[in-house]
Amino acid sequence: MKVCVVGLGYIGLPTALMMAAYDVCVTGVDYNKQLVSTLQQGKTTFEEDGLDALYTKAREKGVEFTTEYISADLYIIAVPTPYDKFSKKIDSSYVIGAVKNVTQVCPKGAVLVIESTVSPGTIDRYVRPAIEECGFTIGEDLHIAHAPERIIPGNMVYELENNSRVIGADDEEIGQKVKTVYSSFCKGDIVVTDIRTAEMSKVVENTFRDINIAYANELAKICRQDNMNVYEIIRIANMHPRVNILQPGPGVGGHCISVDPWFLVGDYPGLTSLIRHARLINDSMPEFVLGRVHDIMKERNIDDVSRVGLYGITYKEDVDDTRESPTLQLLEKVALHLGSPLKIYDPMVDRDVLPEQYHDFDEFLNSVDIVVIMVAHSQIRNSMNKLSGKIILDTRNICHLPGVYKL
Ligand code: SAJ
Image (cartoon, rainbow, N blue to C red; front, side, top):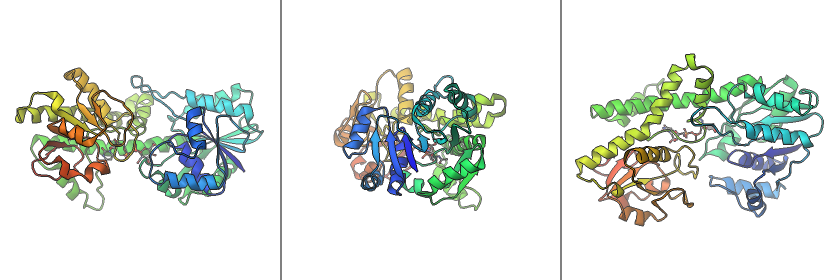
């Protein structure tokens, strides 16, 4: 069985490496020449726990990387599905493009597995017609399946091996065939179902998490009004055997949880008031943080915004992904309200993504009076002593120095 993984980003790369490490014959394809050349030279392309070791194993087992689509028995499509911030619709053009490219090279009877997260109904509405447009009969010339990825950045390698999976397919035989391939490395349960159910279950999982975080964020706002300790209240509530509230924070970022619930809102506007409000609550958090900064500046008689520094640009701790991050969301608001960029530092982000961005922690600290902890990277958890003497707004509840402000 020859497998071709299309798209070597956050999902495709670990998937290709994992399969290869478990003796599946894998070729990874990406149209980005530089990315492929980096991988061919023996380097991984993003930071993730355990990824380098997995890469070494996969190389020993002969994984290959190329920019050319190849003939294979099974294709795994893991290309991005960007979404439009204003219309809240996903752009399936990368998926469609990849599918069309596969039809140029695949042998008759190959299986095409979409791993990219898509809004429910995308495969019927866009992928099937695209394949048919290429003159293929689905179920004869080419089979399709959907195995949405479920791994969490920060723990991807472990979750890839241990999470359960869902595989949606048009018929049981193809579902079982795909399951056999995924069973090569996946120790979790693998459920075979239809494609629409697989699409929906993925989006429902992320929506569940978004709603739970929104609840925590709403509690944080209630507790702020009457000066109650939201963290202590959640800790106690969670001691109940059937309560498991997540943690409040400066907002919800990343390309998944802050995006997927909108698919449901977009398709079922009259039926999704809970989901929509949860999204709006989470989206309101960066502005809430800004309000806290404003209040603290007033209380401390500081009126120079350039003395405020944001620690963390990524959407969460110990990853280098900045997509939809609460910090970037906050900066959009700052541009609206204050017109002056705050100072920024993130140890995980070497590249320059923002003006006023520092690359040295000490220099950053020396240039500010107020530090707003936006991301709980290990780096700051392990150097809390450096923050003494600063005014701190800790949106992640990781700093326990005296006088620290919380959400
Ligand atoms: N966050 C909070 N409070 C919490 C937990 C998270 O504010 O208690 C924030 C994070 O800081 C971050 C955002 O939510 O900004 C999302 O982070 P996350 O760690 O909850 O999730 P992701 O986006 O990294 O990964 C999610 C996962 N989905 C679920 O747990 C249901 C992962 O399994 C999916 O594979 C991934 O989305 C995806 O690609 O869909």
